[in-house]
Image (cartoon, rainbow, N blue to C red):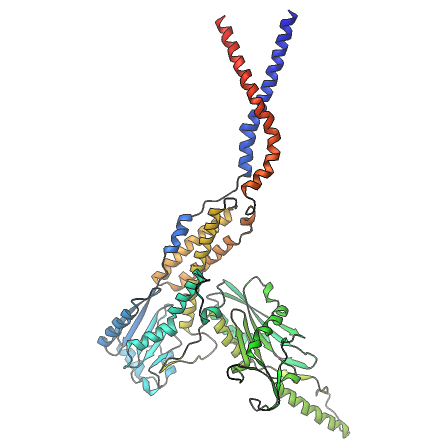
Amino acid sequence: MAAEKDDTNDQKDEDARMYAALGFAFILLVVGIPLWWKTTKVHRVALPYGRIGELGDVSLIHEFEVDVVTTNEFRAKKLAEDLQESFKSSKILRPKFIGRSAQASEMAALGAIHKLRDLEETADLPHPLNPGSLLLLEVPGLARFTESSVVLGNRRTVYFAGDVSHVKLVAVLQDWVLQENSIKLTIDAMEAPTKVGRDAWGRRRIAPSPSYDLLLSLVIPKPESIHVVWDIQKAVSDYLNLFLNHLSRLAEVNVKSQVLYFVNLGVRPKLVETGGPMGFGKHYFIYEDFLPHIITPLEKKIASQVARNPTLNLVLYVPPCEDAPLYIYSKRTAAPIPNNAFISPQWGGIQITDPSPFCIKTEKESAENEATVDSGSKVNISMPLLKNTVAVPIDSVRVMGIFIAQLRLLVGIPDLDPLPKTEVLPLSGPSPREWEMDLLARVRTIEQITSAKLTLQSLSQLLAEIGNIVIQNDVGASVWEATEGVERATKLLAAGDLLAAFAVSRDAFVSAEKAFTDQSLLALLYFPDDQKYAVYIPLFLPVMIPVVFSIKNIVLWFSKKLKGSSKIKEE
């Protein structure tokens, strides 16, 4: 009886141990491991990999209308057909030439002009209003106003004489207005930067961005001897803002200014005793080859690299009197370069002003003051008495004119190469020409679409190859927005809606850059699977070994229980 009771207690103890092991194994295998797998799984939002891959097969095409208006309908249609045939092989730009004869009101307006400027100001001529469109207008008697047979206006109009062939008009459109070869070279350079280089226009143009900082710096190396008189805020308001207001349609420009003291050029100018330009005998000069050495020390002091937006620098350097006048010499001509200014591609521009006339004037006044004091006469206390203090007023018209000319080149307005018997109407103010703004919008749209497309392709390839990279919801949303934006901008550009295509491509560009530079993408980039196993195996292995070995005992115990139940049923 006692033996049976002991066997019963042993059986209960064994059952308790087996149930405990079974419960522990159940919790670990059924609950613990799936929970660990779920909590340590890398979160990856689904991305449109297929649509991103298809972006590489999409061609960028800009279609727009070009009206050809002549005094004869047959000549207009023939000219439009010849122009259309000339642009047949164009891969990016697809102009649609429409020829017609001038209406009676337009002929009257052409007959009433007295100078070339009247062509721009009359309201009776059909100047295009749609961005991207153009007008080729024949002007009877154009030789009365100019020797050129083709005149490119400030609006979206090209004026030409009656004897001009379509070949001449094609050259003006391709080389000046549309710049298709340069745009094609830009796309090739973006897609294969190690194989194709950009031309001068592409290298000089600042990279696309929704906003820029424009930093104006007045550099005075010796403020104890030079007192600069310049209302920079008024100069920006009167001149520069007129140009920036037009650029605001394409990008936001934040204007900042600063004055830097005790900053030198970093290059010692050379002295020339005789033969100076502009009536000066003695002068100083530096060769343009040393200009990179000038930018390096200036950039450290300007501190434009700490800005969040891409920065364009416009620097006005006022040399001290002992180094004035200071000129920049061309190595090729051994003569001063025009305007004594230069630009550095995608960085900014520097110009050197000449304080020497005021230095000479102050020296003469100081000498007269000394003579007056020696003779016992009264001295005007408002007159400067210190020889080394020179008041140098800045000519805002000249300085801002040079700054605007530099800014035009830096933002992407091309410097046109001369064509025979062809001219461009001079600007009447700092505002850019209408066709120049269209060109900027076109090239920026194409650059932004291409950049967004390449960024998405690089990002999708990276995410597909490395499965440990986290893809958060905001990153996925940015990728989807960029993909849809590239597709939509491409369609709008092909439909001729230039401004809408620019706006959509800018948003796509920003979204693609935001997704590519998101910090969360780097969270597990350098944490591959082998390292993950190396971390978790020491934690799970000591726990799993008893569980694995207990499974055998659980199976034997469970089999024994089944046999016991079967034996009881048979009895």
